[in-house]
Figure 1 (cartoon, rainbow, N blue to C red):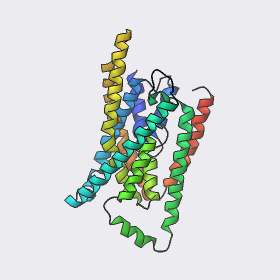
Figure 2 (cartoon, rainbow, N blue to C red):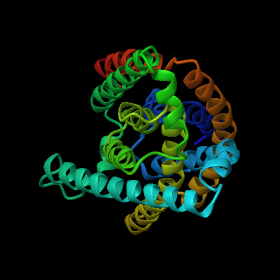
Figure 3 (cartoon, one colour):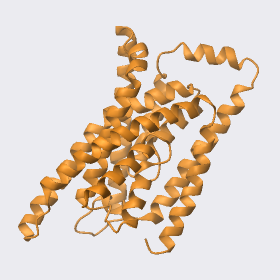
Figure 4 (tube, helix red, strand yellow):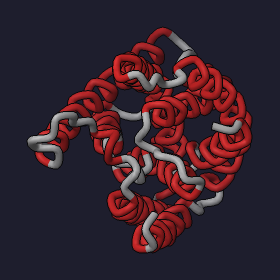
Length: 301
């Protein structure tokens, strides 16, 4: 793959990953428009390495805030660690159950059943984007209405004294993150922050915890996709048409750097929009994007 295409995809991923608009949907659409196969092992590895770049952007951007909240004391860290670990376990259970269910139903009787084969289907990405858009829109409108209720300022101050989300909120955020794993288009950050807001967490608490969950989850996803590429490489060697394994890794690392830089820009923008009460606008964007993606599907992409 030409390096300029890798850089272009990295910038799209970096800008969209940390905004609640589904980076995967944007990258997959871009890949299809460029004539690439998003379900190919080289490109799924590239995608997760781009996620890794944005994971490092998250760490850099949130480190000062995390240090003041999650690492302010051993008690605060223990409370946070327990919740993020539990949320990740819930994500794993839900995500694996969905993955198994989809592979055993949609791929029944197929010799090779991998959920990644669905990643290039725009007819599935469009409704996932729409579902995320509706959830974000509901959360954003709920947040705006909550601001003007009697006693809202006192209620918000009380919630903000908590350094992290509650155990119940972390459960819901882990659950919705699990739903996002198999479905490209169902924004992970958008859905988890929205469900946090709908369960009475502040926007700041939901944002911090959502991206903390991403930092924990990303290395696992990277490992899974690296193993998938290595397995595909072995199979291709046996078939006499080897995949350029090392080239794919090098391109993925280059893409990771550019997604890191773009991710820092996106995080700054996201935080500003959250502070100004514009969360619902991301929901509108996702609904419009769903329509565009479905139109591209009808045009044969």
